[in-house]
Length: 354
Image (cartoon, rainbow, N blue to C red; front, side, top):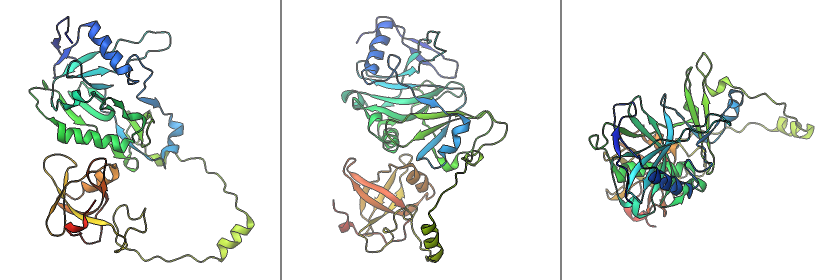
């Protein structure tokens, strides 16, 4: 593809520079490519839906994570565009009301050192937030990869793992090439760590595929937690026969056992003869959330796969090494960590067959 009008290096207000695409035909072809994947300015795509404060209580037991938005910032797409073989940031459409035309989204080429393999496999589209005030591009999700819309059928944990893999395997920081723009993964935290201050804006991210985020702005004058929004108590009606049965039953005493973080969800796992494979995970300095697995006889099993946020956060509590439960993940062709800080002994290399 040839660009009829030259790109111009300019500032958008921060301490970084971008290459603005000034050729309208190039923009239209880019937007058409995005629309083919049901995203971009020419589609009905929405990053999030607004959440009313009165409905905050329903999130308390929801299976999701959350993230505080980085101050004044614009959501958008980071497109790895095969026709031009460059990364292009496209702002989300700013909608000003039903009677007003939306402001045309700004587009810019962002220079970065990354693997060109992405362009040979159909390109990719990441969800991104550009914080101009601190010159940072926050990457937060993978919406399209290898030419396919994976937001439709991949859970958020799986998409987040793909983003982490991109940072560790396909990207290398080069501030000079990035012209002062920092590129970082968005900080995602479990729902139970949510705590807001007045004026904060938060996004709540469902785990299920095809679920948009909920965006919420703290308009209160005091700190907010989910317990600040109790759900309306509902009276539970029980049959008399059930109440009599419960009264006759005596509580069962259970002796506490030392188990890993996820053993409590799967009571059968702590058994010594349940067939679980236990490896020793050691932190690898090549990148965040990168761990090397080892057998009891000192043989390396390769780099581990971490797909769940709860596992990622628990692993960060062990900066040196920790025993973990693993299973073979055929999709990644690696061992995946499913539990952390287990009490069982590490297995020998011969046990790790797949």
